[in-house]
Image 1 (cartoon, one colour):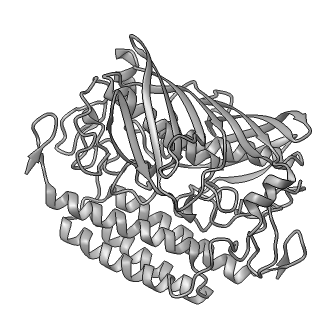
Image 2: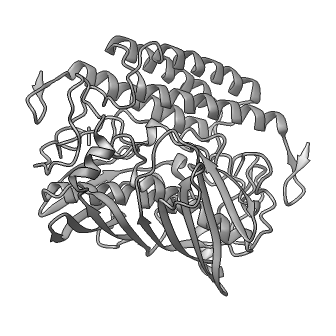
Image 3: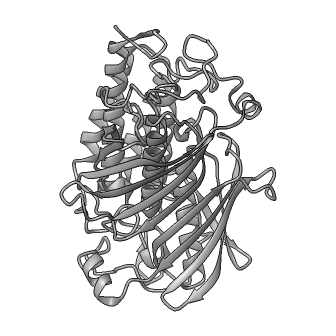
Length: 239
Length: 239
């Protein structure tokens, strides 16, 4: 049992099971967009999937209670739709510190398609928002996105390893400006998508209004909003 | 059997089964981020999910062959990560014509969370890219995203019906400029996210390079890139 940034226990057995389920569901989602089995088999698989949903729904958390293993201060969110090892929506992006910024790797398959054969343009925005936000946190500047700009230099191919980068370029108190890029890992200097994000830490009254009811898995109040040393970056694939 | 924009047959039995599976997988993904069942049960569900993956993988399409039911000219993509009824990643957004633009509705749950209780900022970008692209198509101007700008006026709550809007504001030959918004359906005039997108139709040589190998489900070459009357908008939930 290792521990989180606040010293609370971290359960590796649960993390392994969450990771296993996330991977299995990701595989199922991928198969669902590639399959050509007949309608009766699709319906039978759907019925079996509903049974699995019932099993998972046997015990659930309230929406204001973060899942076990989460550490919002360290930006570790097991079910993040971008970096979450437990999320079937997430590729997932794996982030680590890189020089004065962060770098991430991901490979996105057919489930993320926009124009045939290429990544959905909006998915590039989803990935960049996360990477830029992580770069702000890595620099001690957590904030919520207030502006995001994306320039698309070329289409991003599917099923190829990508490298994502983010770096703080301006630090003005509550406001942080971050830039980032997406490129193929095989051609990291040829930028396919360029991004610029502005993140602002909410004032205390907004923080209270937005996150006043949020607790961790044990029921303790642990809102986001505190600058962090982002120690979770690079510690496994939890993002 | 109704037909697609090119007169090819459209199989309602297959569409019903694809829609059923998409809905079932979406429910499973949602349950996976809310569950608190123990690690052994998570692993057992993962094993069962892998069996379902094997069943779907019994017959698959090549990546350059669009799935049956797709009609890229009419912008109907059953597995789109935003509008696809068959996609477990998609909320899905349901689009329809609205005045001189398009409007969409969607409700996003805990699987799309960014800051606790609110939609991931990048998800707003994903949704907007799709809605702006659909608005360009509705105006006869298909193109690929070259720039996307998002201004976040306020956090977008989870589990609340949203209304998404897009409208062409500038038409300059191959280039189209589109603006759009995200708001709560209960407060449609209070804009939470504002977006501006620039879409450019690739020149013929680029179209050939990007989509030269794409075929429809029957094996015929049917690339995107042709302006369309967007007749699929509002015809069911296929997006």
